[in-house]
Length: 210
Image 1 (tube, helix red, strand yellow):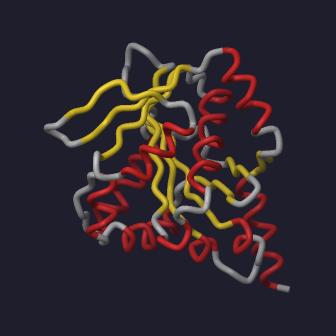
Image 2 (tube, rainbow, N blue to C red):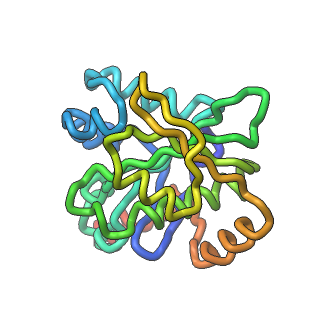
């Protein structure tokens, strides 16, 4: 989606930025991992295919993608953005007849960042973005049955199990955003700062050159 191409979201411990070309090499290295291929039900791609995928995610109207950065490392202007990458988070509009329905997908690619609550923070930030900017009213998460950590996290976030597909070995969890959930999400995410991405990148480059 182009809607977030110049959007930066700053939370407590993470920063979300649009998926750009300079992120692709690091992302490609991540996706060579058999573990991540299994957890994300992905096939390995060539580097050229990965660049094509990045362009698709940027251009397509039914995909919204952010790269997750470690905020503490990102605040160190001596580090390149790619050195701060932790994972990615996506919203997919899966039903052309219902633009308020979205599939939510998160990947914490760096093992050292797992199990520290970062997935919960990122998920809430992305849900808040989907709610306020994209008009999403119902979120789905499709997770491999072997990925019990992610299943447990989404259930803690009040997602309910709606189906299990034994063929694809995945479970579908769902959350409808009613008034109480909406108000709590907006309140919990009131600290998130939305910034101009290009301007922020320019500021970091200036600090590095000093």
